[in-house]
Image (tube, rainbow over all chains, first blue to last red; front, side, top):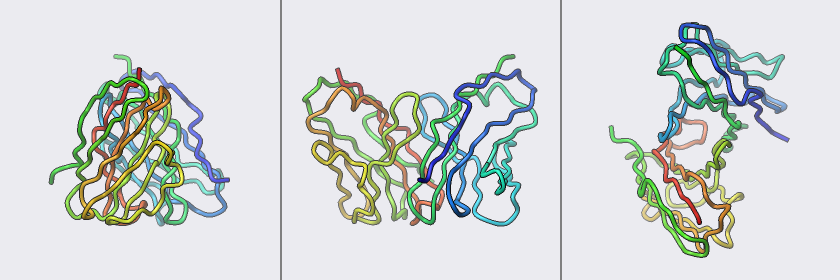
Amino acid sequence: AQSVTQPDIHITVSEGASLELRCNYSYGATPYLFWYVQSPGQGLQLLLKYFSGDTLVQGIKGFEAEFKRSQSSFNLRKPSVHWSDAAEYFCAVGFNTDKLIFGTGTRLQVFP
Amino acid sequence: EAGVAQSPRYKIIEKRQSVAFWCNPISGHATLYWYQQILGQGPKLLIQFQNNGVVDDSQLPKDRFSAERLKGVDSTLKIQPAKLEDSAVYLCASSLELPTDTQYFGPGTRLTVL
């Protein structure tokens, strides 16, 4: 069955530290991959997406993600976290051109 | 460019009452989605429209939930009667056409069922 896993429910980092949020999927072919961010009381905003081509994808707000086919992963990274990055982050996967399946999210806390 | 609009932003009702949510997608977007986001979970697709036709409603509890998209633009989602477990944020999103096109989300409606 197709599935998306975000193993980390909650991550805490210090401002200025690097960040990596994990996302794994289960599917027989290469899916479409997305990362969304949700601030409290807000809708979701797209950070970046991968369909094909270069496996390192640059997004908004200094985020990047790398697709690793061998590990069925699409981890989100940022070299230096800012306090304003505190939010909930969702990985989403589209199989074929079907609906998106969202992970359960990772809540990021940033300490000064 | 105006974003996806939703109303109301908050709604509190008692169980067995009915409630309706409204969504106005981005102009020109053919596809509209309603998601349910329960606290601590990711959004779950309830229904997807392309223009005014239903593409996917496999996870819509049809005994109590209904949705329509008149004239292929605005959409309403209704719950009748509401249950306690319907307490969630209801998100509307729109995209140009395919689900793999970027989906733009509205701010959501937070529903509390007492």
